[in-house]
Image 1 (cartoon, rainbow, N blue to C red):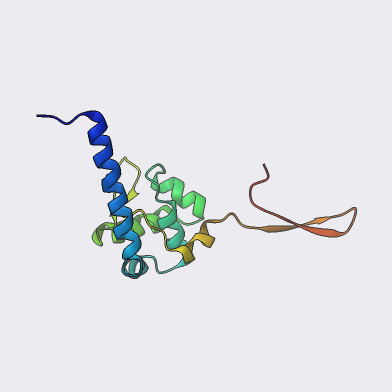
Image 2 (image 1 turned 30 degrees about the horizontal axis):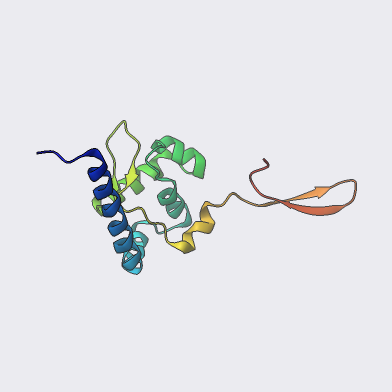
Length: 129
């Protein structure tokens, strides 16, 4: 006896809500566990970059670290049961949570541009579109 697709979708939606509530309710404990493997700003940025779409070499290039650094981080995350990774597939986090304090690390760098004509400074975000 199989469930209708709409019933399965509603069950899945409800399970996602419950999961999100549990993650938010245990955010402090989750952040403590994440902090055991994300011991530097670069590792925190690696956690943020684990979106299930990018390969380790792409994560390394985007953050400015070596592929070996990403590999070590992935192995720590796998050992802590926080990351899932099969060779040839993009790694993904098992807990869809980034501590709020880490979010600033994911923002594009801000640079100061000096306008030569007016000698004024303008702040430019990393995205110029």
